[in-house]
Length: 167
Image (tube, rainbow, N blue to C red):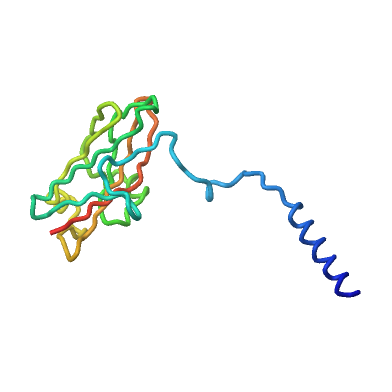
């Protein structure tokens, strides 16, 4: 008899616990998914793994070309790349917001729904001498992060993109 009473009590507690809490779908900024209304993607980047990346050959001159784009269906166009953070793969929004660490001297004007950022490994090494940028086996990675301004003045922080430097 005690076993039946215990099982009944256990089932009652489980049933009440399952109905006593209401999920109101209100979460704090700490746990909400911060996706921009207009997503920025990197055309031609490999998106397998963590951050998207481009491969750059140091032996072939080390030219870096990153194409940022937004969906044509968004109804927006890219005005400019306002700021660029560059460095090791640990860069973040704080690096991007530090005006003294802006990689570019002037905004880069966009064209419709795309904008291109170009630099070289040589320029990177000059502007970020503390960040190793020579290839190792099998590769070395550096990173960039962009503040993109749209035609309506809204700003989007694009996710970081890595440059995989190969020999």
